[in-house]
Image (cartoon, rainbow, N blue to C red):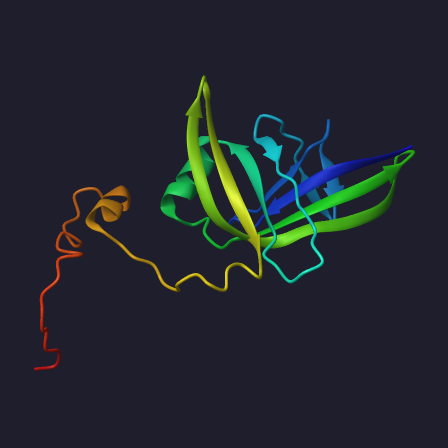
Length: 165
């Protein structure tokens, strides 16, 4: 009878290594923690026979260290890998790399006695139709630097600005 263990590796400055198993697992000389209080859900990865964006979600508990990383913005575009390690009679028989991509979106939510962070992950064929760059507003700046007035006039347009004169 074959069993498998799902492993998630998120390359934060200190890599987050998680396993959905009853005890810690060593894989590629790294220790993956079996922490069911931190790893809440791993979404499905679908395969297609066309060149397309592959996505999946991973939901983690909102522990303070993770919340700080998310609010600092240090999570965007970090590499993530999703492995499935197959075992038969206690011996590793095969490893499948189900997904390799980057963290592209996150959503925090509060439930009854639980704070969760759901990361959306996309393959390297992320979105060819999206517009490059980022926009900022005074409201978004206040999240990262409360009281900062540097973006106060963002979005207010002046006509006929002559640069370099």
